[in-house]
Each structure stands twice: as structure tokens, then as C-alpha cells.
Image (cartoon, rainbow, N blue to C red; front, side, top):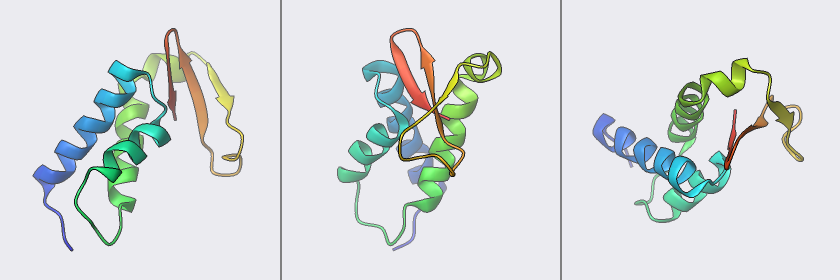
Length: 90
């Protein structure tokens, strides 16, 4: 099944909401939103755009060097950015 740009924006908005308002990591937020979404062949583009949105939404934490390794994600270049009261993958 294909997707539309509006659908992609709505999905990423829901992921950002889960990260910001509920303090979930990107992976947890992505999986939560994905479970409630319609079936697609691949969510790769949705994950990539969500990843970039979270990365750019918290640029001060990334540039401030608050990136720590995440167990199971080494080698993918992923990490956890700690923002007081919140965590998110970058």
C-alpha cells in the first residue's frame, strides 16, 4: 500500500507528540503510533523522517554533547539524548 505526504506528516506529528508530551523514546513512540496506524508494506520512510524530526526538534541537546550509547543500538549510530524529564533517540 502506498502513502501520501499528508499521512507521513500526520504520523510524524503523532510520534513527536508521544516523545514530547509522554516522554517516550523515539523507538517506543514510533512503535506505539505504528500499532494504531493502517497496514503498510514498509514503515522505513516513516521511521527515517521521524528520526530526523526528533533529531532536529532537540538540536541543543545534540550539540550539547548529551548523547549516550543505547544498548542494542551500537553500530547504528543511535543514542539517547537526555533532556530533563525526557529522553529521545538521535
